[in-house]
Image (cartoon, rainbow, N blue to C red; front, side, top):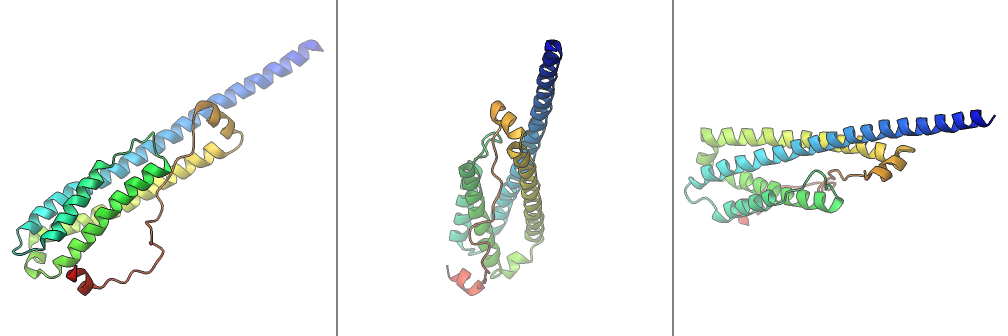
Amino acid sequence: MKRIGLLIVAAIILIIVFMGCGGYNGLVKQDENVKKAWNNVETEYQNRSDLVGNLVNTVKGAANFEQNTLTALVEARAKATSVNINADNLTPENIAKFQAAQGEMTSALSRLLAVVENYPDLKATQNFMQLQSQLEGIENNIKNSRKVFNDAVNVYNTKVRSFPMNIFAGMFGFSAKEGFKADAGAEKKVDVNFDDLNKK
C-alpha cells in the first residue's frame, strides 16, 4: 500500500514536471513571437524615418517652401528615432513613450502633406509623387505590423495569465506585455480644414 502511494506521488510529480517543461517552452515560443513582431514594427517605423529624409530634401528644393513645416518634421523625426525600446522591456510606459514620439512624426508628416497642396509644381514632380506613394505604402505596413504585434501580445498575455500557466509564468519570470493602443483622441471625428493648417 505504501509503495502504491509512492508511485502515485511520483506520477503526480512527473506530470507537474512535464507540464512545467511544456508550459515553459510554450511561454518562450510566445515571447519570441512578440519580440519578432516588435522587431517588424521597429523596421517599418525605421523605413518611414528613412523615407522622411528623402521627402524633406525633395521639398527643400521648392522655392519659398514653409521652413517651419520642414523644421517641425525634422525635429519630430529626430525625436521618434531617439526613442528605442528593447523587446524585453515592453512596459506600458515605454510603449506610450514610443507611440507618442511616432505620433508626433505622423502629425508633422500630415501637416507637410497638407501644406504641399499650396505648391502645385512640387506636388506634380515625379520624385515627390513617388515618395508620397512610398509613404502611403509604409503607413499601411506600419498599421499591419502594429496589428500583428498586438495579436502576438494578446496570445502571449492570454497564456501568461491562464491557469495553471500563470503559476509557471510567475516562477520563470514571464509577465504580461503591453500592446499598442489607439492614439489619444482617435475616437473623435476629425475635421480637417486646410485653410487653418496653412495659416499656422
